[in-house]
Image (cartoon, rainbow, N blue to C red; front, side, top):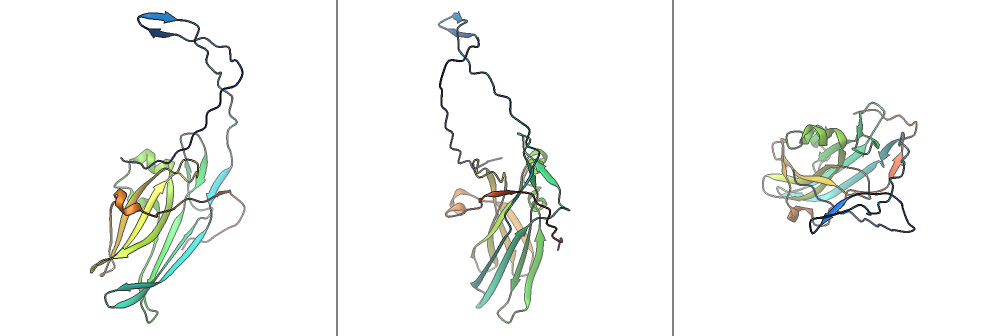
Amino acid sequence: MKKYLALAVAVTFSGLFISCGKVKENNKTHDNIIVKPREKVEADTVVHKMNEIDVTNDTIKWMGSTYKARVHRYTNDSLSIATDETGKKYRNNLIKMVITRKDGSVFFEKVFSKTLFENFLDEDYLKQNVLLGLVFNGTDSDNLHFLGSVGRPDILTEEFVPFNVYITKMGDVKVEKATLENLEGYKVFEEVEEEDDDQDSVV
């Protein structure tokens, strides 16, 4: 499974750390390799959540008319928790999409979860990551195009798997993995909050 990573790492060595290891060089074994001892990391017991986002695009030209697409990402306490390999916990997200016609009538309405992409992701990745975003990305004669993503909400890692999501003129949903060309200008990350006591209802 291809993942897109943008990882910035800063490593600083200071002082002298006393620990021994072995390495072979030119068939010789050295016992004087200095290794920095691992620091004990406190377990992160807080459940984190991504900010709520509500975005409307009301100028979509498609099939000779104008459509409006509203995408609302939210979470609530009824949703499960994703735990990454470091033990950090995140509340899963839902995304409600409503597409309306020029006269205000509803053409498409659905609540998406990350299970939309379960046929493309292995079980561990699906458990450890959350639904990040779903944004409008254009049209063709038969489909409205959106870019979706599942990944880790941590802004420092920016790791996610992107997908093309198509809403057909019959109101069906089709999914395929996205290519790098599809991702120009695509942004899904923002600050992640610690969970509070607010209750949201699942649509």
